[in-house]
Length: 285
Image (tube, rainbow, N blue to C red):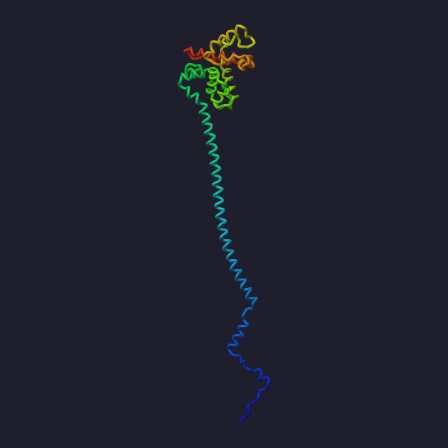
């Protein structure tokens, strides 16, 4: 028989067969592919980070939505505040208008009470009728003459009525200011101006010659005093003859108020007895 050839020993070593079982081979391969604890922990942390990031993104979206809602509500609130402010201004204007209307109503009250009421007209003014009051008023307050203060809220007719009430009833200035809803100083000025307006338009013969106080004589003073005595029954102001009374204070021309008031009351009484219209009063230079 032929002998089997012998292989060299190093060749035999290279032909050695792996005697590992299949289970051992699988375990060895798993040991090679499985991550280390550090890698596993890193992977776990990345997963948690991704989850947290997703949650934060969702919260950011929710916050953005809430922010948009709050901005919308803030704009709505700002609009409401502007509307409320506008309403407050309207309310303030309405209250002011109401106060002005009430003030005007109070100021007009005496005019409205006397209108077409001759009995009240005579009681408050000394003139026999409302028609005569209107006629005298038109004669005194001619269209080309404006005696009203531009700052005054009273009409010319109201001012004229106030002056006549002062002459007729000798009402205190404080009382007149309250009745016509104006200040004490303005009421005092209106009464004096009303008397002056008539007095300085009267014919010169009615106030003593040229009408200058410097030319008064004892006769003129006696006439004025007698006239005042007769008129004070109708016009109560003329009965206030105390020497210390402010009615005796002279104006810049030299006429005391009581003297001017006497001739104004005389003019008004003459209008009561006349059936014709009052004479045209001429403005003096």
